[in-house]
Image (tube, rainbow, N blue to C red):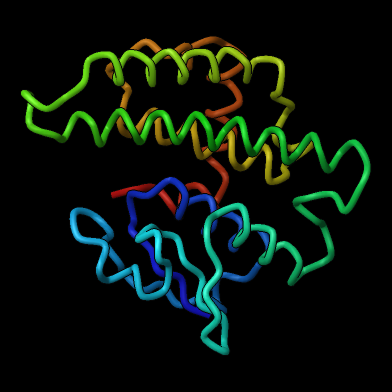
Length: 199
């Protein structure tokens, strides 16, 4: 399998963490693909021009990160990161959706900040900032000790917190709150997170 990736993409990081946690990283070749500013190198595999894209052995592309993570989880049924059914499944998927929503808003802020100053939208930045803060505040009721429940929901939350630390640490986003900060301090020491730190 081949993973089209950019080393600073948090969505790629989530996929790589899952691969490491499932013992699959040796089966995945990392192929650098920078979709910004020109998505041409990615759009042949993903018409949306975004990474990550997982190319299966037969060339079939899978995108985006929730689909790829579920596929990788299915390859090693032992210790599933997504429960197969019941309330636990929906809890994990809801947590992933919350974390991905935080990422979507945060990435939007970063990309907006790269536009020429005269073209930036202050209202768009404020809306995204509010979404990030609300999302982080909601995390306080979602966190469990990582050693007790390290699933795709927890991985997604940790990746979102890592991205906020990487790109938006100059802002007060609520991540310093003790429960959130403690969770992130524990998770970022895991080998899978150490190995996938952005450069």
